[in-house]
Length: 241
Ligand SMILES: NC(=O)c1ccc[n+]([C@@H]2O[C@H](COP(=O)([O-])OP(=O)(O)OC[C@H]3O[C@@H](n4cnc5c(N)ncnc54)[C@H](OP(=O)(O)O)[C@@H]3O)[C@@H](O)[C@H]2O)c1
Image 1: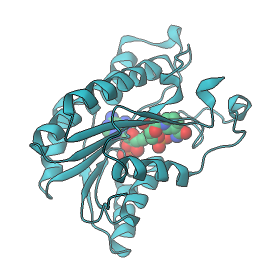
Image 2 (image 1 turned 45 degrees about the vertical axis):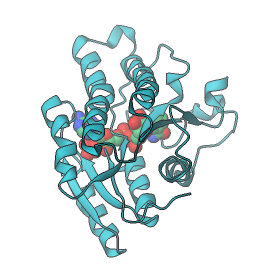
Image 3 (image 1 turned 180 degrees about the horizontal axis):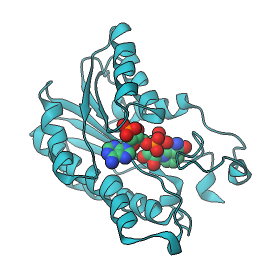
């Protein structure tokens, strides 16, 4: 594994839940953090203080990724703190919408935040890199491998992000690797739905730990640069059954 020491890493949606866990792991590995948030200003500020108290470098950046203009500005703003080494596209929305519930606004909201924003950020990251080595990691969902009728616009946005991962891996070679982590049952759903019954379809029979997410992220950030276009399922086998 190479080191992340002194490298600038932007995590979108980095103030809470998985984003915050990944930020803590990157900081512990020596990386300098650019933590993006939208509404979670208090959480972002508290996380920044926590990381700085541990000796890490952490800067905060606010942007509504449902606004392409704001999404386009995020990489230039982050680059004010020095050249970025990595971009982690974690910010997303996850709404419990079936076909009959999905109106045009919900469809566009999911595609904008979960797919268009990662595209705009990745393109801007690639341009800013100017040929320097870098890494992009996209947070996917097992549903991208087995799209079904639940969470329909969310699922389609993640299918798109899986395709974008592979397209960009080819487009950005050889300097920038683009990989993804397809998650299963990590934290109870953010859409407010209950967590009952989720483990019935998880062959591993348990929830993942946040540490397992962090280990996988660190592997893709600091592991072999010959791995690109890869989607690692961290889902206890959920996509298989
Ligand atoms: N949790 C799981 O078990 C699980 C399972 C499968 C896949 N995933 C994927 O893993 C990633 C992280 O999961 P999570 O559960 O931690 O996510 P989450 O809590 O649902 O949301 C992550 C972040 O997205 C940001 N976000 C939402 N709307 C935004 C907007 N309009 N503009 C900018 N940021 C916005 C939020 O930022 P603010 O709070 O600052 O507004 C939030 O902190 C997501 O991509 C998710 O799809 C998670």
